Image (cartoon, rainbow, N blue to C red; front, side, top):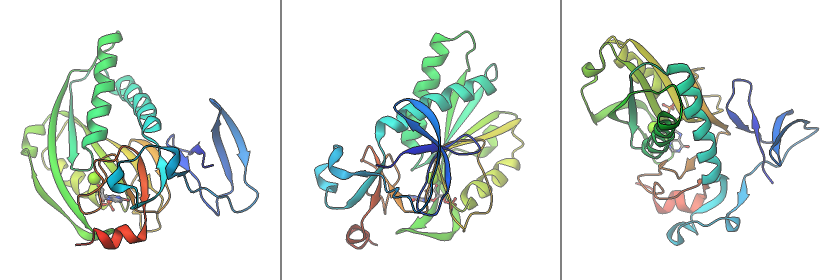
Length: 245
Ligand code: IMP
Ligand code: MG
């Protein structure tokens, strides 16, 4: 069975054939492990979890179960409040893929605000970007909606994104945002894909480092489908054809 492990810069990492070792979470304890050869790291069998009936034929494996996403998000909320506490934060949701993570992260921050000495006043903003068609990046990042970025001048902005792959989307957004002179900008991304196409960009906070697969669920889509799936899963090849545009 696949086990997540902690990566060097704090995200929980899923390793795959070719990696050589790291840390893994075993029965609630972090322990060091060494991989001696190819490691079968392909997530979980689909029938171990509940998935919507209408997607049962479309998915290969569950890569990150919903419960694990929630637990990791709770910890990210704590880290963000620790670092940004005392400041007013504008949480900027990158639509559409970021909406689930945004909503759950903010719920955890709100819970901390109610239960801790240190609290963070929060307001929200939204931007809609598009860079993908089918399972391929189009090499262009388009802003196709959202609030005026100029309202962020002088603010502490927390950008909330679903996944960083090449890093192009985030670099484009950061450069647009810098024209509006915000006071501070931090980025939290639930996922960071380990890919040779990456620009080297790393967000300030990340949930999980994942292999170079096309992932769906928890608001990550394939041509708008699979946002209504709770777990993060791998799509099968048949489904890529079925939902192709
Ligand atoms: P980047 O610009 O290559 O970093 O890509 C980031 C954007 O591409 C994300 O905001 C997603 O919208 C989309 N994306 C990248 N990888 C995936 C994936 O595996 N599934 C769904 N969307 C993805
Ligand atoms: Mg996105």
